[in-house]
Length: 186
Image (cartoon, rainbow, N blue to C red; front, side, top):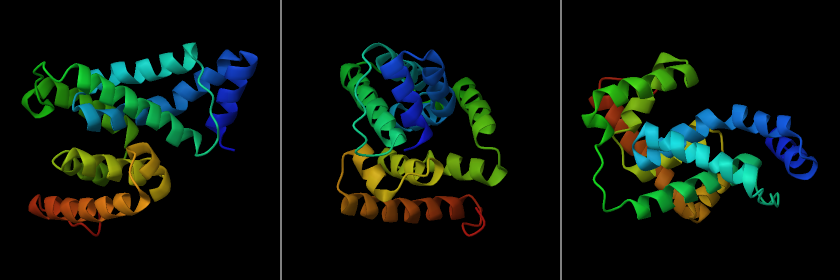
């Protein structure tokens, strides 16, 4: 049982607010950056992260422990993000690449979360990949989920996730090489 599950159980079953606070502190940054890879806007991802935690705090869905707490939480966040995209498909948004002030804000969050310079270069190269590739790479390498857990979050089979991961790594390697970054050291 991981720490998130026990914190959530304390909050859900006993009303222990500190358990909820622990979940927010432990998972909010990673969830927000993951949701950014889905919606392409850090401000929207921040709102969706808050909505995810609001859902946990108010509806208190049951965690059935069929996967890790992190996988379960990220699946809820992903579903909220996909619902948001469906509702707002008609509205035009400014891609993050066209709004320098958003890129600098995103870089500040990334710098706080991903401390090493090489990881930042990899993350920036990842932004140029297809969203599906960004998601699978983020879940497996930055969030440390297994292929099986990532498959659950992305609602794909394990085989399909492994295939997507293979293509994503190949695409990332090409992107890093185009930018002059040695893939083996990154």
